[in-house]
Image 1 (cartoon, rainbow, N blue to C red):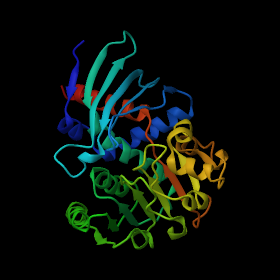
Image 2: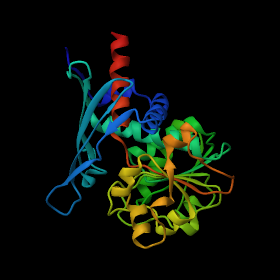
Image 3: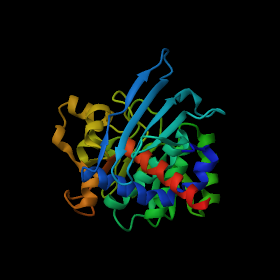
Image 4: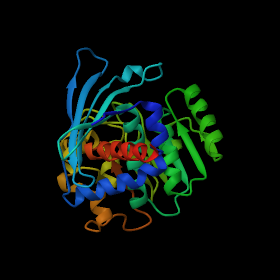
Length: 321
């Protein structure tokens, strides 16, 4: 069987974030129904103090009947340079004979499916009339999250915050051109989220930048940037105040830094995780209960998200042949 190769531009063309949202809903539901198998992410820290690491994520899906593994490096120091922070390859296999059928750019798959997963969670948890989006960060994930949030909610105002005022301004101007929404730049995180309906944290922060006492009633948060147990974007108070949802409970209990710190401080227990988003979508777990509730989606990523996205790219390419 011919192995199909997809570089970043090809993945970008075949996997628009708006189309990927339904794929992530289906992936969440498949996990909730026990139709998948996946290993927790394996991370090897590399020598040095720059936070660079090498990771693998593997799993299978019963529908579509495929399995695969994502192999990638994460180099935080690359942010703002010509080199992507996430680089690697996604390998997709067919189930009948175990043949490798596709190799795809892992960085692009990750960028799209992460934002699409946040959108699926937002659609399940945020208030329907949510229109004011605050984005913390100004990298690729920040940009992807603006697009994905606009696909599920009537966003007409965007507030941006970033550590570099210059980069935040450039990002804000770019988003205004792309989406024709009202955009403002906030001088700090507290002001950025003060009136937001939805907040997406997409930073490389190691310590909390967002405090729970700042979160307005009724807000929904997608906590995306921190992906290891020692990193946090939101503080313990934010965890305590929220109705807390995850993509995959076992992963959060191992790598969800914000949640683990709250447990360590005896502020919450393991049952503070209300459920997985797939359980909300399946109707086995109640999501938002009222308009004033604060909801959090802690995103750590799942192998089946990558597998679903990769299979879609391959299927779409084959249909175009």
